Image 1 (cartoon, rainbow, N blue to C red):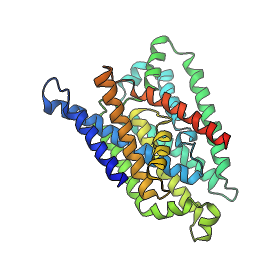
Image 2: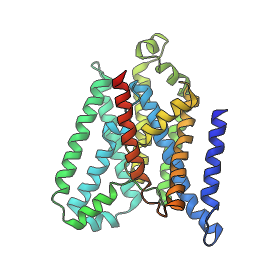
Image 3: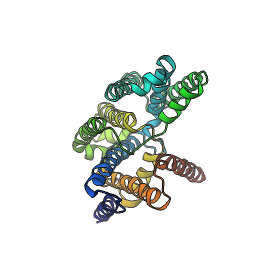
Image 4: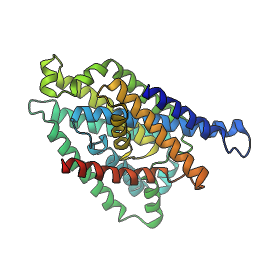
Length: 311
């Protein structure tokens, strides 16, 4: 019932965004706005789904997949390209080639990290997360070091690339990202009951016959592909997944992933489409949605940390 109500809210918001306040041709407005809505849907599925699965794997609800350094790798590749080739080469680069390169680099980095620290005899999930945090910090420091030596124009280009943008996505990138996200969702559907078992803990899952290491490695790979594809298309969004995943847990009141996963996607659409509606139709600007989400997500993260610390 709650998912049905959430679905109706999403449909109502999307219809309002597409069909109201149209200054010219309705068909043209629906086409342009429809691309933005599709981008929001792809990001909601990728970020919401991957964050809920990441929480299940790590047994921690204040972490997000970005802790593994995806945003740092994205920032480093953009900065390195401007640093070595110049802002003109970065701006004129083929978007599809750049997207493919970033996805391949980020997925290869995460798979190597998982295989190295979780595939051998010394496997340790906490060690892997700690190494991911350290490597992410190292990559950000390297990117900042290169940014300090850029001229103001090149620095502005890099700064713009660091902010996520959901408006008017490239159609080819949207199609490629959507295909990878759909493939990730299809791979997760047979694992829904196994994900429910994983919430009971590693020892309980092993006792119930789950090959914990193989399953977790596969889930990490799926999460990596979805997050890398989404980040390469719209840019880094650090706290969006944290917001929608924790709202989904509270909204459905269940640990079962057949409820929490669609709830995270639906709440993601409510946040993105509703936020875009408020910014565009009430305040008259729509390019700051990602920054507002990051600001709200930062405050929400502090709230979760303080609430956990108080218990």
